Image 1 (cartoon, rainbow, N blue to C red):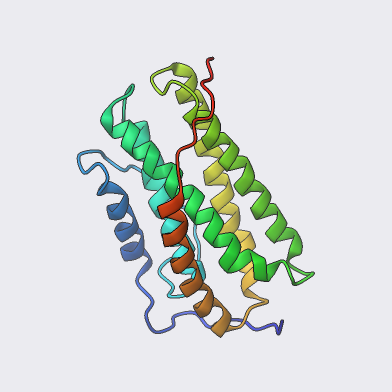
Image 2: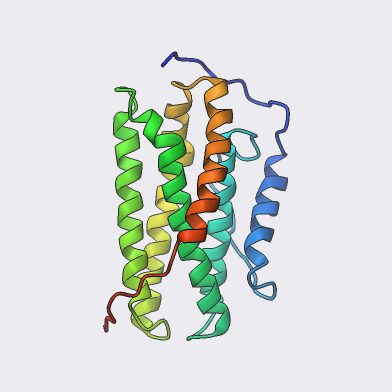
Amino acid sequence: MATQTIERGRTGSVAPATAKAEAIEKAKAIAPDLAARIGSTPRTKFRGDPDVFGRLVEDHDRHRALLAMIEETEGKSPDRQKLFVELVKELKAHAAAEEQALWSTVLRDPETTDDARHAIAEHKEIDDMLTDLAARDMASSGWLRRFAGLKDEYLHHIREEEQEQFVAAEQHLQASDVRYMRRVFNRRKKEEKAAAKVEKKISLKD
């Protein structure tokens, strides 16, 4: 693939603060009465961009809000249950669509193969953590402890993507590539989310 530095500030971009606020509002639509205290977020040049990287960061901000809102819930409350279902479907669909739209292409470039493999491996780790949580009593202290572990792992993962892996991948993609990838991501995520399920194969106890 030809190396090209993709120009920032393209037509269709949104102010970073606006993009972040809009992503949080999408999460809050699930449980409007709950606060979404995500605090400061890692600096990224992609927030609000009209390409695939901006679209991925939009989802990341939405996921940050869902994680924060779940922390505001208690026991097996309806809000905790529906927010967890939404989180599972969001993370599964996002990871699958990201792998298909972005990392499948990036894997073909020897200079970015390691970044792609690292991101995909972390997707699997996060999916395993979601499956473990789904199998446990969400009213237990053990569930909350494991949820905190999931949150830490996911926030670390998306910080790496936004500040390192996306930056590296961008240098090896054409502007037309990242615009096309956004369309692929949107289509695949919609399909993946419709098919995503909260898997509870067994019941686990602490």
